[in-house]
Length: 131
Image 1 (spheres, rainbow, N blue to C red):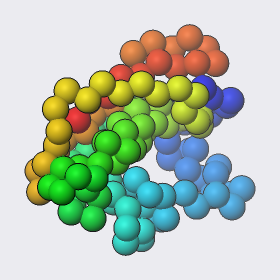
Image 2 (spheres, one colour):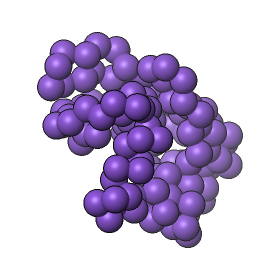
Image 3 (cartoon, rainbow, N blue to C red):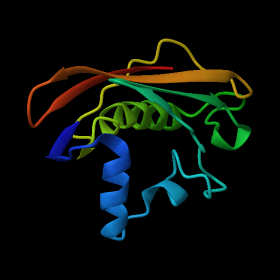
Image 4 (spheres, one colour):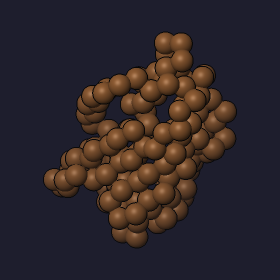
């Protein structure tokens, strides 16, 4: 993740600061927005350099019949890794993402998605994620 700004005080301070700027990303965000009826509606538990959420693979997010779409899997990972840095008070965007799909994920499966900070290189923070 490439980030442009670090904020002191962690995620709560960052959310308050972004709200002052008129940014309301959590309500309609495809991944974590609770008001988005077509979204993933993820609710993350965050600690130190790690974020974790549960997700049930929905039929409306399938690619091939009965299998979760690879783009949705990538969105799950991207969001978890983003929340791992966001909790540190860092606002950033994904600069590059690479996903290795080890096996297909069936719709209806209860999944755990985890994002972790692997290395902080200043302007670039390397993260890893698993589903």
